[in-house]
Amino acid sequence: MSMLQPPPPSLLDKYHGDDVLPLYTGRVCVTGGEARHGRASGIARSDDGRLDVHLRLPEALGGPGDGTNPEQLLAASYAACFHGALTLLAARSGVALGDASVEAAVTFARDPVDGRFLLSADIRVSLPGVDRRLAAELVRHTERICPYAKMFRQGIRHAVTLIDEAAPPQQHGQS
Image 1 (cartoon, rainbow, N blue to C red):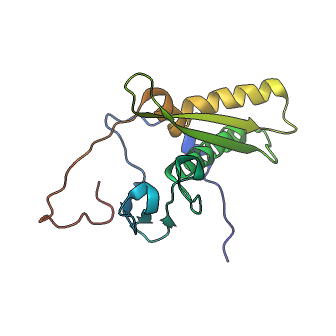
Image 2 (cartoon, helix red, strand yellow):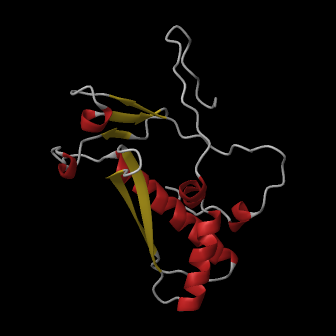
Image 3 (cartoon, rainbow, N blue to C red):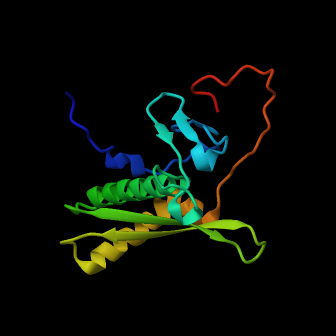
């Protein structure tokens, strides 16, 4: 059995290319499930089969609450990425974090501007045993480099495409 290891702090080394350099693409397909509605009864499956999640509406939105939902998945992703970036920064700085934890809260809400919906996110970082000034500096720097924090702060490049049903499906590794 292999021991799980964090990536090396060299992952933080700056990239000096002219174009975006893709490092990994996670691919998940959601189908509607029993209610034919991704949020109410969806099934989220990754292309490698490692993720297979049944989605349910939370009780707060009138659902049974007996499954996970998109906000929880996004919060888990954000917290994991922030924790990872924080750990790498601390390692590069020679700071032992010990029992660091990151809690993310993603809120699905009504948008007063257009009457539709919006998301917001809050991150809470716990760094027990780390000097408060140093901890604040680490968190501030992590917020600048964490791609999820950047996404929430700056937006994200995205494309929405209606696929031609006659076209062959995308193969693994293609973007």
